[in-house]
Image 1: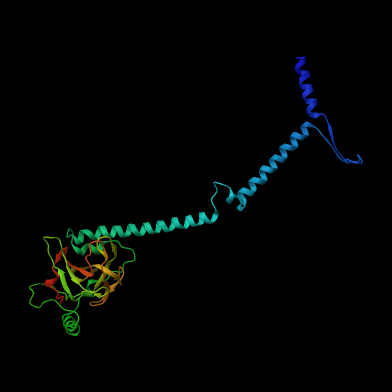
Image 2 (image 1 turned 90 degrees about the vertical axis):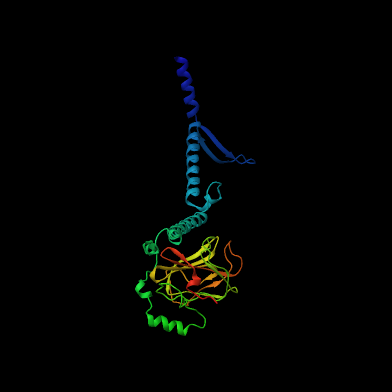
Length: 287
């Protein structure tokens, strides 16, 4: 017990013993500076200085741009750009989802699985709806249009056995390279023409699709009165957007050769009624 007390006493004495630090002039031995210190004072002073150094370093790292030069920290500009790109990506994803939903809803109509009259039930963003009554042309109006515009557009054949209540005009004048063939699943006519030739609306209607597909390139789809739908594929340029109302004979696109299934500049033209494909030759003269 006495030895332990002696050891503790010696340790306390070593920590509290005073030492004098003197700075002398080497030539004159004149005392310039002196300081009384103990081992305990040195430990306390060193701890305080270390704490202050850590505190100051933390302050500079967290509150100043110095942290950008430390590995593992990203720059403020990079974070801002990443946030903007994330917002733009989310916006593009929403638009892509809307386009995919519309394409899936439109496919059963073109395949004849559902009637075209249900197309108005599709929920589209910023789509302008047009009443069918506004698209119906009177008998006098149809005769007048046929007479005035017969030079570059041709109406349906008068002797055709049909109950069509709407007058269709040729969207493009030219030679037909491939006709309508349901056995080969070619439910359209291909009209050959020079590139950039104007493609016109076959009748009054509303644009329900205007966009790009991998196989058929730039595609435009119009909805007309009496549940008729016309489809224009392999276009070079599209001049109308979804929701636009177009008049009969109005230029809506140009002849092109877009898409993987194209064989050269031509127009792939389809005509649908009530979910069933119609041979356009029975209603329109393309020559």
